[in-house]
Length: 104
Image (tube, rainbow, N blue to C red; front, side, top):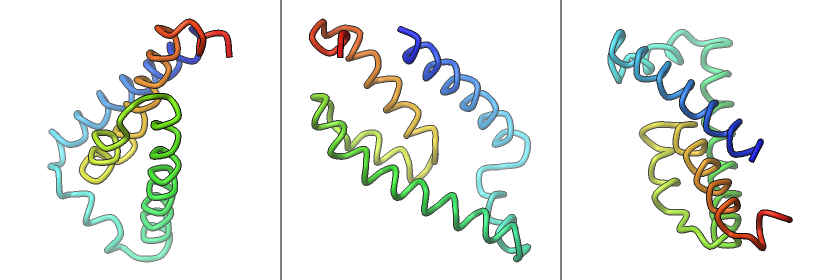
């Protein structure tokens, strides 16, 4: 239950913050960050690579847990970590609802 609650709280907090930033600055304003070069570009590239690797992990993990990975992978492109966090919430929810998985 703890993993589900942590995943849900992080998902909700980050989603709320992301919506606020998007409404304040606009969806495409994130494109201005890597254009600054230096660390801004490095951090952007790092986040893109991390999201890509996490998405590659998500596919077999979702199948192992009986979930379709594709809605979550599809969310990563427009929403970044929100798609990954949504998957973690769904995975933990399923684990709680499936007695054999809840004890593992």
